Image (tube, rainbow, N blue to C red):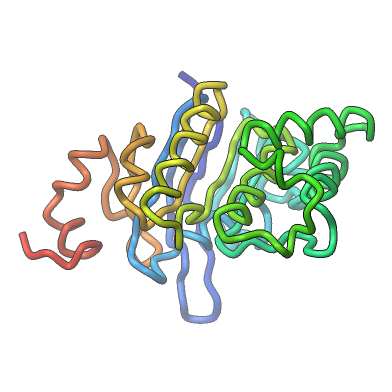
Length: 240
């Protein structure tokens, strides 16, 4: 099956610090790829390159068969690449519903009447319907995380980038989130998920990709990767 997203030799440095160093990566349509790595390994930097928040130093990014390496973030979003951020930053004074309409209109380039329908659908999907008229800045952490996910979904992505969306949640809240993501996956959305809550990631991921110091450490079936002696040493601090 052809890759929906393909990264070839992707590099980014800040002075002498290489945050991604020759990364090759592909994701097929409908797949959920989990990304692991210690703090500072380059995971979020990789997302920033895919979404266009920062520019490449070298390499190539292809999405749906087209090179997108030089496209602006809003162009990639409108092409179908949606993204959540590790620290939710909604428009706090706007309602939850208004946040989603804004995402649908400006991120998804939907006409306003269509954006209202999209916002309602996403509110139902993410369990936020009861919070629709609340100011986004007043939400508890779980609902702020849900809103971050919902804003990305409102753009109607084919590829969804999730950056530590389970971080800071309780065990019960993480289970709720996993069930919501399973429903999104069932609708055919391709996902790349950076996460430190490993049990949540393993409940959904078809494949794992482990990064350390901006380079690929391991890749493959989830259980095989988690049993890899080098992954256990670097990521979990366990000697083989």
